Length: 222
Image 1 (cartoon, rainbow, N blue to C red):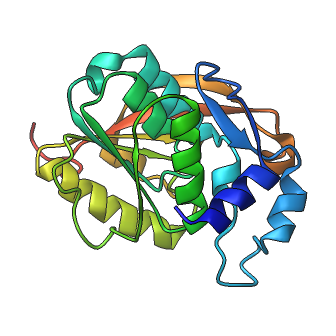
Image 2: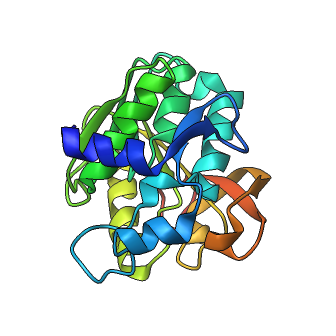
């Protein structure tokens, strides 16, 4: 993590408990719109939007599920894809994962993951890079919170997750009803009403579902 990115996270986000997973503390922005504009989050530049500064509904739901079902990850190698703040990765580490790898394409997100893991007293290996055209490596569990927010992203993510599942990993996603989630490929594990920043979602609560990916094609004999 670069010193500049770490300083930016500390300057613009405050360490506070996560609304739906208060066991975890994250560096979170108090005022979403100001930070979004500061980082040119409307894709006016190459700098990615500050997804790392907020506890998104999909991540909160998935982190809650992992926290309440530690046997899912305990003693296993875990990959948190598009990790954002690292909330899900930290939940997995707290639940006893053997190792946790958190991957992000934003250098500031990688810094946020490292700072957040340190604040929660857990080890998470934060990694900068786009791995979607590759595979999940040695991961036995792959977790992804709120990744189906655009059509292009959804296509790439689904192909990656299917490769992981067909290699033997359990694949869980948290999703608050995003338009591009291919629901026919998943089975529901849990659903929650998750508090969210109204400035980001236009509502105060999002119904959020935790899904497990079925690697078999839709309609295939089980």
